[in-house]
Image (cartoon, rainbow, N blue to C red; front, side):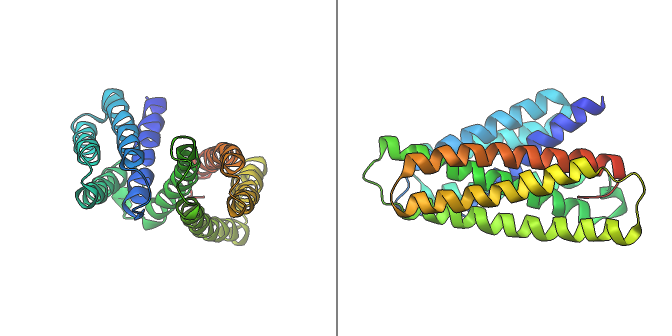
Length: 241
């Protein structure tokens, strides 16, 4: 049962991060089908969450993601962005209901959960945008540079949360601190992603978009690994990481 709970939370977290990032991406140079693809990804996660036990809330997310997909399919940019914003709000509400500390009103869990979601989604979105240069080679590098800037902002916010939580652990002298998991989160999930974004930025500056995309593949994997390590550590400690 716990395994399905973790899987459901992962799906909702993916929807939350993706919807926030897409709602915040305003660039007329990007093909609407890029956003259409992201809405379809969100629909897939929502369907999986519903089938895994989320039930009506999962189908509500799936319905909103499908509406978003349709709006972007017909090129309604403003309505599509608004739909992503609505999807983000509903995903935030579902996330709050799913988190174990919600009954206690703990905002630390929810904000950390959201920061983690946005980091992974922002790096993934930048990586997927890099692929668009294969079919839209005439597109300027400005959209990719902005996507990398958004990912860097998400990384800075996530780093601030992580440092605060680790400092709290040190001050509290918590026993049985999972140092290996924390090291993986900090060194791979945050340090490795920082290096990846810097290298991708340098590649984007010289319009080496496919090199940037390859680096962002690795950065996406490191972000996922780092957040997984943080999630396991948080479960062991009973504290947000």
